[in-house]
Length: 420
Ligand code: HEM
Image (tube, rainbow, N blue to C red):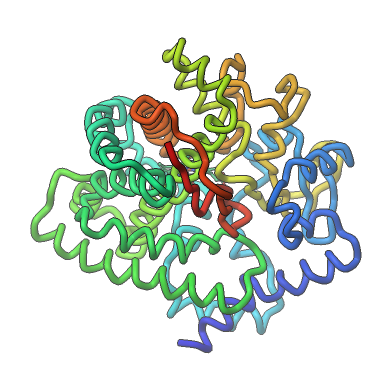
C-alpha cells in the first residue's frame, strides 16, 4: 500500500512540489501562492500584484488571473474543463499512476467526484443531488438550523471555531446525509486531516495523512451504505442508495464530497464572519439597527475573505483567452479571492462594508456548471449562525491571537479564542 501511496504522491504532488520549489527559486511570482508563508498570511497584496501584471499572467507552472471578468469567464468557458487526472504524463509514469489508482481511496477531489468530472458524467451526478438540494428544501431547514444554533450557543464559547463554527455545519450536513450525530467529532477530525488534499505540492508525510483519513471515511461510508440499503431513512443518502443509479465508487465520491464540502468551507465563513464583525464594531452596530442586512453581511464576508481562495481549469482545445493563446493541457488558475477585490467591480475593495450594494457579485461559490451546489445552504447557515451568535453574545470579543489554518486553497481560522 505504501508503494501505491508513494506513486500517487509522486504523480499528484511530488513533481509539482519540485516544480513549485524550482519556480520559486527562479523568482516565479505564482509559485509564491503555494510556497510563500507571507502570501498565506495575507494573499491580497499578492493578488493585486498578479492583477496589475496583466489580464491573464503566465507563470512557469500555469496561467493565473485575478480579474473578476476573466475569472468568471474561465469558469464558464467551454474550451476549459476540470479533468486534471487525464492530462498527458510520460508513458511509464502514466502506467504507474493507473496501477496505483486501484488501491487509491476516493477523496473529494478524486474521480469520480463531480468536482473533478466534466460533462456528461458531471451532469448525471449533479442532477441526482440537485433533486434533493432544491431552494425550497434548503429553506425548509431554517427552523432546524435555528434550533441547532440555540443548542450550540447555550454555553459560552471559548474557542469560536471548536465550540461553534465547526460544529454547526457538520451537524447540519450530518443530518442531511443521515449520519449519526455522535460521528460529528470523528468526521471533523478526519475532515481536518484530509483538508490539505485540495492544495498543490504537498510533502509526502502530509499527503500520506490525507490518504489515511480519506480511507477511514471511505470505510465508514461503505458500512453506512449497507445499513441504509437495509433500513433506509428519509435522508439524502438513503435516497441516493435506493435510486441504484450510482456505482459504489460514485456513491462514495458523492457522499464524501457532500460531507467534506458541507463543513470544511462553511466553518471558515462562520469563523471569518465572526472575526470581521468583532473587529468592526461599527458594522455590527449597523446590523443591530437593521437586522434585515444580515444576508448581505454574509455576502460581504464571502467577498472580503473567501473560504475557497482559488480554483483552476485545464484547457481542452487551443483558444484565445484574455488576449493570450492558451494551449491544450495548460492550466488557468482563477484567483477567486483576488477577483473579489477587483476595483473594476467593487469600489474601495479592501474595505469591509456590510451595506455594499453589489457584495453578492463575489465569485466565492465559483461559477458555470460547477457553481457550488451547497451555496443556498451555506448562505442560510451563515446568516442564521452569525445573527444568533451576536444576538446571544453581543459583547463577544477576541481573546488573544487567533491561529489560521495552514491550508492555502481553503482559508479560515484554526482557533479563534473569544471572551465576553
Ligand atoms: C461558505 C461555504 C462554501 C463555499 C465558499 C463553497 C465553495 C465552493 C466552490 C468555490 C466550489 C466550486 C469549485 C470549482 O469551481 O472548482 C464548490 C463546489 C461544490 N460545493 Fe461548495 N462551498 C460552500 C459550501 C458548501 C456546502 C454547505 C455544500 C453541501 C452541502 C457544498 C457542496 C458543493 C458541491 C457538491 C460542489 C461541487 C459542485 C460541482 O462540481 O458541480 N458546498 N463549492
